[in-house]
Length: 183
Image (cartoon, rainbow, N blue to C red; front, side, top):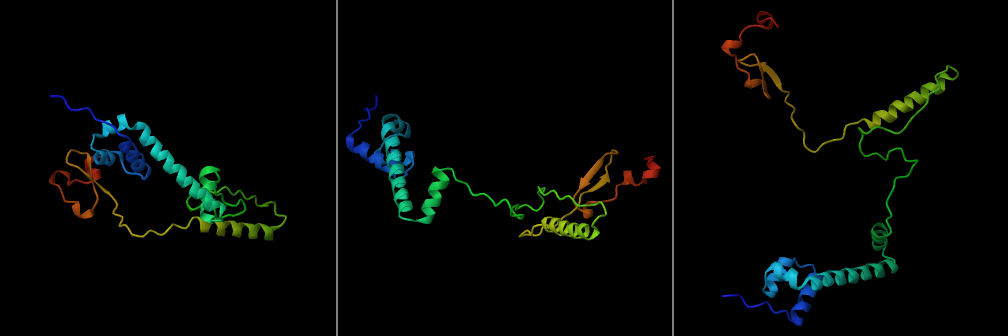
């Protein structure tokens, strides 16, 4: 026996538009109106799209009104998202890099022609201080224990890697020294 056809009413269309506009997932909307998600998308495609578009337009209107009223956060958000404004570092700021290991774009020519040894020394000291500050390692929240891998000769002349020195056990077949093995 065949199923009855799903009947779409104006009341259902309004409900779907409203629910889509407030951000309810389509699977949940389908449960609310009593159909399968595929049926919802097939029968209510226009209503789903229109509900989301109207909600976005309403929120854009509120954001625009807040920006016009002087809300600084709204103004900044609007300019970054709608006018493609971006924050940039000042070109004269030497500490714009957040990564101390990143290569620096600073190129410093030192007068090494023995005309002014005092100036050469001052510039070299300043350069060393600058790069020493850039190379400081960043602190980590959790200290990690470093256990170097140790390579041990395996039974067939190959090598076996282990992470801990406690894992090394003498093997009867590998008791000869490297000189005795001809290495």
